[in-house]
Amino acid sequence: MNGFAEMIIKTEDIIVKTIARILIPFIQLFSLYVIMHGHYSPGGGFQGGVIMGASLVLLFLTHGYEESKERMSEKAAILFSSTGVLIYSGIGLLCLLLLGNYLDYGRLSLILNVDLAHARSLGILGVEIGVGFAVMAVMFSIFLDISTGGIEPGEEKKNEKASTR
Amino acid sequence: MSFMTVLSILCLLGGFFFFFTATIGLLRFPDFFTRLHATGKGDTLAVFLSLLGLAFYEGISLTGLKILIIAIFMFIAQPTATHAISRAGMRSGVKPWMKENIES
Amino acid sequence: MDYFFAAVGLCLCMLVLLALYRVVFGPGIFNRVAAISAIGTKTLVILLIFGLLYQRIDMFIDISMVYALLNFIGCVAAAKYLESRQE
Image 1 (spheres, rainbow over the protein chains, first blue to last red):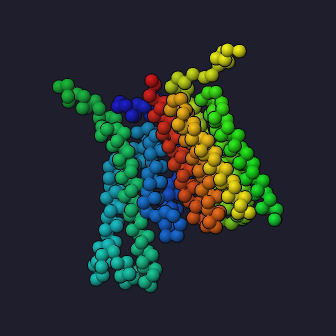
Image 2: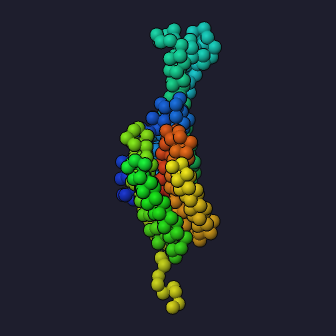
C-alpha cells in the first residue's frame, strides 16, 4: 500500500475513532446551519462548504480510505462539484430566459408566486446552496489527490506490474 | 446586581484562575508529558467554566443555549486531541523525565 | 460591568503571549503543537468577550464554534502525521 493509507491504518486509535463517529453528524448539521443563515449571521455558501469538507477530511483521517470511499467516492465528489456549478449557472440562465439580466433574481417572481423581495431572497439562497455543494466536493477531492498522489491504494500493484514487464 | 450577574462573575473568575495556572504549568514543567497534563486538563475546565459564566450572563435565551453547546463540544473534543498528541509523542520516542536527571 | 469583561480579556491576551514562548522555544515539535492548541482555546474565549463588549454577541458565536472545530481537527491531523514519522 502507498505511504498515506498505510500510515492511517498503522496509527489507528479507538478513542479518536469513536469520538469522530459521534461528532461528524453534528459538524455536518452545523455546516448546513451556516449555509442557511448566511444572510443574517457570518457564514454563507463558501464557509459552510469548507466546514462540510473538513468533516469529510476528519472521516478520512480517522477511518481510512475504504470506509470513506463508501460514503463519498472520488467519482461522487466530481459529480457533486459539477452539480454545484450547474445549480449556480442554472439559476442565472433561468433568469435570463425570463427576459431579465443574468442572475437578476427579481424575474423569478413570475414563476414562483411571491413578491419581488421574496424572490430575490430565494434566488440568493439557491445560489449559496450551489456554492456549498461545489466547495465541499472540491475540498475533499483536492485532499485525496494530494495525500494519495493520484494512485489509489488498490491500484499500486497494477502499476508496479506494468512497469516491470 | 442580580443573582445571575454575580454567578457569572464568579464563574469567569474561576475560569481565569484555571487558565492562569495551566499556562504557568505549560511554562515551568520539566517534560513534554507533564506539560500535556497541565494544558489538557486545566484548559478544558477553564473553557467550560468561562463559557458557563458567559451563558449565565446572557440568561435563558437562544444565545445562552448556543454558548452551552460550544462548551459541551469543547468538553468532549479537547481531551480527545490531548490523547491523540500524547500517543503520538509516546510512539515517536519522546523520553519521559526521570528523577535521576537531577544531581542532588 | 464592561470594565470587568475588558480586564478579563486583556489578562487572557497576556496569557496568550506567555504561551507563545513555548511555541518559539519548545524543544522539538510536540511542545509546539500542544502550545498552539492551548492558544486556540484561549482565543475562543477572547472572541466571545469581544462580542460582549460590542453588544452583538450573536454574530461572534458562530465564528467561535467554527474555530473550536478547526482547532480540534488540526490537532488530530498533526498528531497522526507526527506519529508515523518514527525518526
